[in-house]
Length: 93
Image (cartoon, rainbow, N blue to C red; front, side, top):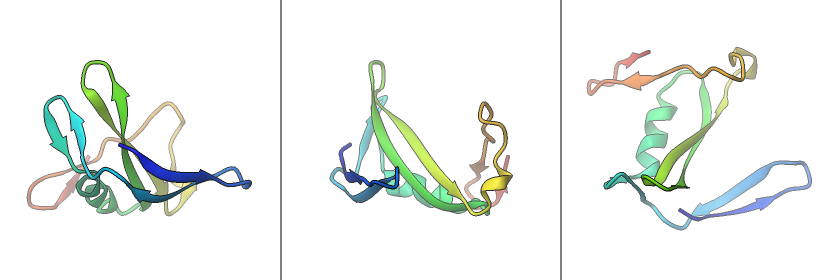
């Protein structure tokens, strides 16, 4: 996956567009927009971006980035909450 981005003097990357709309991971076609849609269902997520990163075993690995609505809610840097949605759209952890 290739993203057109730029690094700004304020220290942030800004993504302009996604050149590939699919990530190939372990023989599966993963569409970043669909994963982002799931991330946006979490009540604490303000922004989300999903990319594919090279992986020797899976071809590409799905990697997601989120911006929280309230950054102070983030836990310790070494932990990440697990969030899942079932097919009915109800959230669960």
